[in-house]
Image (tube, rainbow, N blue to C red; front, top):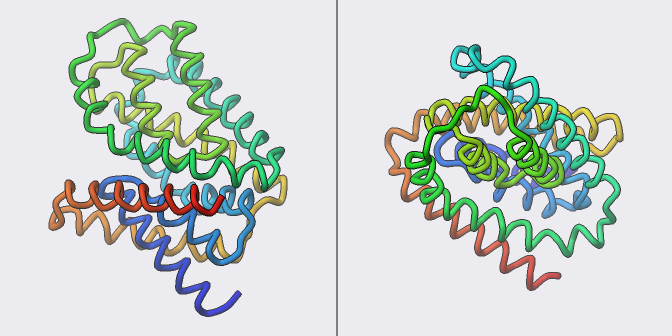
Length: 252
């Protein structure tokens, strides 16, 4: 570990934490930074998930009051998230670096498109028709399972996918959807982090640096979000995602 590596990861994680608190998309900065300092692909993806895991827990805890009336519903969806997250994490660990390197540009492009279309998804969420959502139907469980596998395998864009799947399941209140999404995302991240730690797939020195920097960045971003227009931040993140996707397509 060199001073330049520490500085690069600290800056990238700080910026990623700030972006996540303002507009999302922090993975576009933190994951490539790990690759840039020479961390292998699989370990970089696992370490990135561990570094931002505390943020997922705090987000879920912030919505604990809204989640109380969905306890029975969240048990079924939580089990699907647990199974999917574990399957995605194990799939990542079983994937060769060479195969994952070919998937990286496609995954980044997919996440960028999801982020770019998130505005339209939000509109859909506001217009979706209400249905009974205290009882889980097989379609909702299947969708959540698939989204959780993706989240355990890569993670970027999982939140947007989960928003869409919850809307299809019948949720029509944006705050309600966000609360459930944060809880289920925390389940996915928790089980994948546990899987990665047990498998020894985490670069702890770099991960600890990023965890601290991301936490500070999240705090700073929350304060800056009142001063910087969200539209500017979204456009910047989309531009970064496009550039990185093109770079990794060229590199592969």
